[in-house]
Length: 264
Image 1 (spheres, one colour):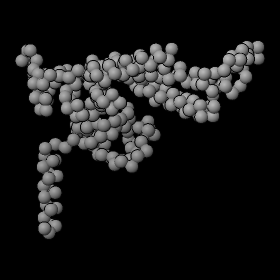
Image 2 (spheres, one colour):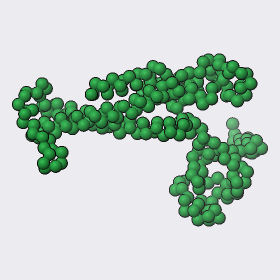
Image 3 (tube, helix red, strand yellow):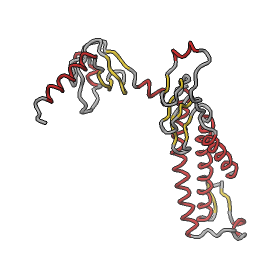
Image 4 (cartoon, one colour):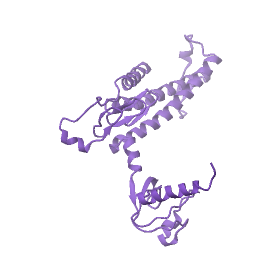
């Protein structure tokens, strides 16, 4: 059974690595030139990006439905290899869990005379098994190696299992990690004035008691001003205030005037 797990895991792993995510051809253009107005142009690949594609700086290519660049497969996870990658994330914890159970049962049978499953009436006598000389004597080094392998199996089960859980969220939402990140960077517009107070009572008790415990400065806002949000909740939002062209010109003028006070 462990051989079956190994074959399935390696099959999906190497397919995720060598099949690749699917790259947009260089200098690609849609068949209908009218569609170019709806597509982004990649200056590196000298072509248009297909919908839901993204340029990977590591691969230096535009990737179809790119989710992320995975260092463990040394490739991007995208349209063509996402199924192989997800299957690998599922099979690896299952195979390691099976191996961990075998390691635990092996140590148990070697350290005790019988296996007990918790009930006094259900016990397996291992005397018949002990009549035969084992092919590999279970010495102290073998016990240490088994214990070390058990730790690796449990660690892999937890770590890769968490990655599988994240990928399942991506699949269920039908939204890649990059698309979620782009949505978090979306611009919002202030609908009412805010004076920048740390605990504004004028915004209601719920907003007052949900104040984030952070030393980051509060930004005063006027109705209609734009915020580039990085993250947030229903009550608070983290981000940067987008300055207008007049405000940017004023900031540059202040910096130039301040520079006149310092000698060369």
